[in-house]
Length: 204
Length: 158
Image (tube, rainbow over all chains, first blue to last red; front, side):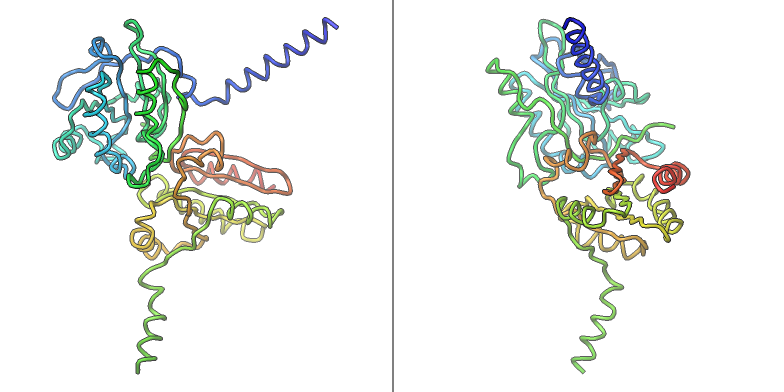
């Protein structure tokens, strides 16, 4: 009987580890410490996660210039920053794309795009793509809600900003809802969503 | 005379635009189910997705190479609905693809990504290889080289 018991637990554990392998890298970050970063902003200054110690959290968005899905979300990201910054959750945007593959996503073009759209948040260049990899980001836009829990940033939501690329057809604002749940000391649900986006172009 | 103009319009219409048929995910699935012995290669793409467009000739090539086998390559467009009639149609007119093209008619696609494949993160391009009779189902996120695509297919089409 004991052997059967042991066998059962061994099977259960191996099934769990198989599941772990199949879980997405971005999803695996939920509840974990947010990877730290220090990247060049469009104004030439470095911005790091630790600079946000006095805020309640950070809305981290991997995005870029060329991707039509990112472009569809630009106005919503600006609005999100205005609304959420006031609640202690400012936006930080990171461009992870290889500018050789997409010249539109070069540092010079990031500056131009930010100026043209009037970005109110830092727009950082992940030149080595190490930060996108650390976060398991695969597409643009790809969003992470980082919550300051006694000085440590913890990932509490991963995925889409809302449920439709077409702003007039949105029915659920996932990210806003996650922040409001946190403000009411509730756990975030859903804490993981997906969205169609442009695959991040990795350097070869 | 009016008939002539009409006929001329119909005859040349195809040259000006190529609007692909629309399909839902369940429609696509029904198609796969109804041809159990066919290996379906469903390539999810969009006109704005550079790596997608770059790998299209490879899919056309493997379709040609496997023409005498029960294999069907379908380019499933995830272009935005607002670009269906102009950008997508213009692109298809320019490219003159040999393989079938369908437009994915799923306005709520963001909530249906797992239906295409649970392991898909949503990044384009993505490809599914599916054949009902052999319970084949392979999903690949990211682009292919011609060699890697040929090798994938030769494993499934021995």
